[in-house]
Image (cartoon, rainbow, N blue to C red; front, top):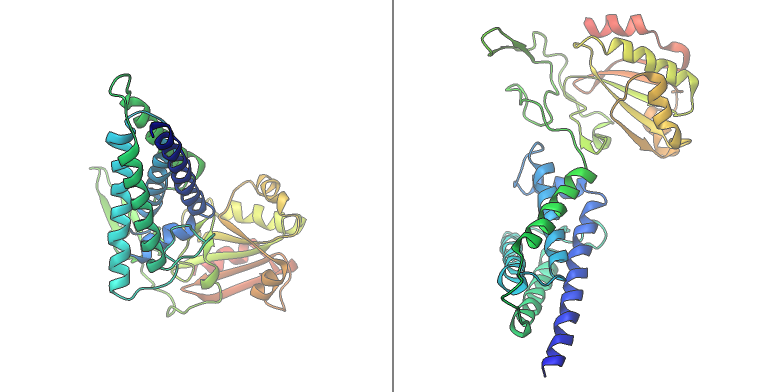
Length: 335
């Protein structure tokens, strides 16, 4: 009987280990949808979401790994795993109660599950944990709680090291969305350590929703592309003219008042992107688009390099091919 319970115990432990690690890994690739889900659910804003997402996935990964080691399994690991599932069940029950559907994010974008399906999965998993708790035997000697702590700490540390991100700056009172500042409000330090907040003198044209608003994630982070002044570029990684334009923008960007630059790259020769930034002398937030999507977004009349100056989503000036003029762009942005 004892040998049979040992066999069942290890079968359950390996299965639960695989389930939790799989759940954690599917949330990692990509991690942005999980961060967005935390924001959409109201658990965090865009400054807190990167921290919370990595913490949750790290805890889930650590608990999965801890299930196949023998230290404090019955006294700590199984109860902690069950507690995490109970918290998920309460949240899923609330989603069901208010009629919220869609993908719950339990397995990221890899396997889509409704809140009801996820709740059933979690209840079954709780049953398996209860069975494992009942048949498991834990020695009281030679138990090292430090092993459990190290597993948890390294799992969380791995998440923050493997998925680095830039912390948000100070939130501007003129802005309603992170990261900050997407508007023209200026923070001026003063001698006593405080700040004078200078609001924008010219609010600019009435805000509009531009064609770039649906493709506003650069370097894995959302950007308020239609808020304030922005420079949007269309570059090919292997294009010499594009590299020269990027180098000119790097010179203009030395002025702190120059608008932030964001790049759409066509996916031809995408492996040359690091080399592109080396030649330009500055790295900009970017995303890579398929060639069809790239030229559709730029417009049929456009050719690379394409550089557009936006203010509140309105295109103020555009340059395509050999039209780009660094001095003209600087004067236009300063008007």
